[in-house]
Image (cartoon, helix red, strand yellow):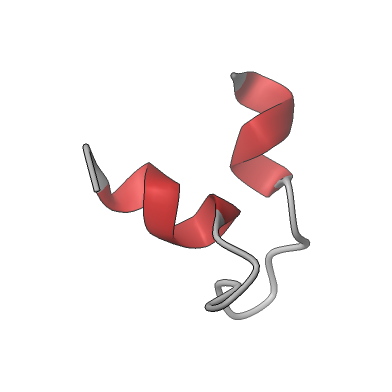
Length: 27
């Protein structure tokens, strides 16, 4: 985990109200 963003991208722990790849789109 370079940053919290990696956690949201991880399919194991999708952030609440955040779709998988929510951060992936940004990257």
